[in-house]
Image (cartoon, rainbow over all chains, first blue to last red; front, side, top):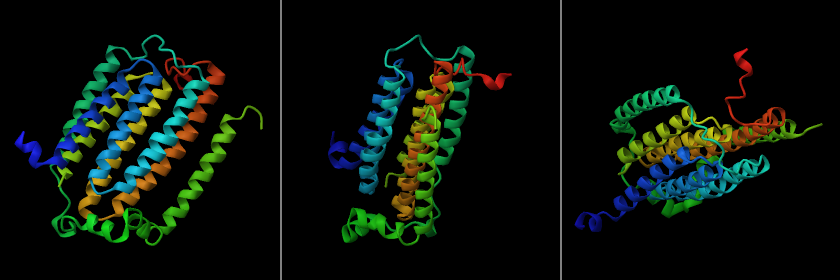
Length: 178
Length: 98
């Protein structure tokens, strides 16, 4: 109990991290696609909390607006359009598929666990609190927007080209007759 | 500093997403699992950004843009396939098997 009182940040972090992992498990095991989508939205909300705790409040807001808002509504819309809301017969692959998935999953988890011991090189690590201080100075949006429209201006413009291509592609694919 | 825990949570979410892609047959659910994997990577970016600088957060921004484009085009493909085959079960979508 005293640890929880002494570490409010870590306690919140672990609570939402656990909730995110549980929601993700439910997302991939629910039979109905709608239930899957709703559990995925739950996971995305938990991740937004984690982003905020990791000094990225603007990314957290974007996560809720873009991911949980726009992208998941698109998913729900397609589920509704195709009338897949009812849980059909189970769509899990057979035992062979499950075995391969477990094997690959465990192998990947072991590799990523090894990577989790790693840390960025000491000479590029900023002193603790640098990001939070920058956000206090420039605002949560300004701290991200400054470099985005300065150093990363060209990638940002290329992103608009990508979105345009996606719009054209989606219309061409979804339209019955052009 | 929450870098270590974030990398562990990110690895767990990524593996859950991979397992979903390998286990499910519903094309839309597989898409959702891909989104889950993208989000796991975003968590890594944000956690590293806390120590190395704001560039990681900007990369998350680009990943979100790519994810939005991918979802739009991917779901349009699912719609087109559904019109052709009347199903989104990947068991019945096996043109490449010959």
